[in-house]
Length: 553
Ligand code: F6P
Image: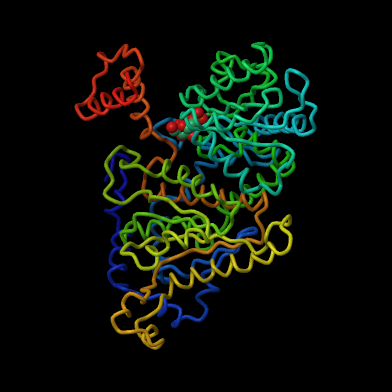
């Protein structure tokens, strides 16, 4: 029993049953599972909105799925899901509601936090964003000297950067090509330097995106950007209002920074940073793709929200994907999960998912604060195919680690591509399908021998197979499809957190590093002021001393 009066996960009959089932399954082979069941591919494929999800190449049987769904039921995943949609404070350690689903609710819907319907406020901000986005896109919003804005620079980090940066790349064919977009996040001055070095301040608009407006990297970069702007515009403070807008929950801090709150786009503490790019944090994206496309994206999110809430468990995509991850972590020793999009436009997709998944489920204590005895969130990694194939897929195919992977692809190349680039798409997708096949079914020693390979090379050229993948296929990478994909992963992460009994919505693990950085910084300064007050361990003290030496301090 834990403090909430529930059996701990690893003490439940459902967990035990899964353990026994895993032992009975032993080294079950995907080749055998497919041979024994000609309908497997069809039965283990779901259609959700524009997405087709094939999960047949997983190391599971009907019994595995039955037991996993039983676990979800016993752990109250559906009840927690309803509590989330109802606006209950399921982020227990921050005592906050978790209502990113309200960001894409239709205008007439009701989603309450502390008895107040938040949907009208969501739509009011969306309308303000739309009006502003249209003014920038049309050239009506000008800079201080009357010049049209030609580049938008988003300054933010984590959830205030990764979402818009990822979605901007993903939806490039839908963007206003005459406008430039840059995303600055790193406190390394090189990031801002490279972003600004060829820009004209008269034509540059900064969006300072920070939920808290206290994040040191963002405020440091925003301060430097303001200096750059003022230096370029003759030091006229009045220029700031035409070149800086903010996205935040913290009007007070925005004003203290010197940005007119009339130019602030609001969101709320019930939106987690990593769940926020469909809020005002997506302002840069909305300027890029236009309000209409942005709303199409929201509709895509909504479609999967509704699916997650209403589809029966056995046909519920986020539930099944979440449970498969639980299965591999606990019963196959998997430590990581690869996300491999076969789309150049999804180059930032996995980086975005890293924060979504790892900041949400990288937890070692349960919701009651007791250490867990089971694996929680995996390491999420990956880059677009086919590039990864010529880098790390070797390990996926023949390494000693089991790494479940998602292969994501689209039937149609983006409309903009012309011949002969359009024709390359079949080759790209042939690679996706071939990888799923090779990972699942491998190549036996007998098959290698039959090709006349010398006996000493047979083991080297044998592929064990049995490497699980989910294939996610959509017709085309549109704003709606992107929304559907992101909502799918958001809810998958939710399901896993619910089963593991962890708080997926806090991120205390990032705090210590921030505090220590503040403490170390004085010791690095040129004048060395404050160095004596810094209580450094011997290793760090020696590194700091060497740093000072190398910097000539
Ligand atoms: O450091 C973690 C974090 O709090 C993330 O959760 C968040 O997305 C990021 O920092 C940025 O925070 P903010 O939007 O408040 O600047």
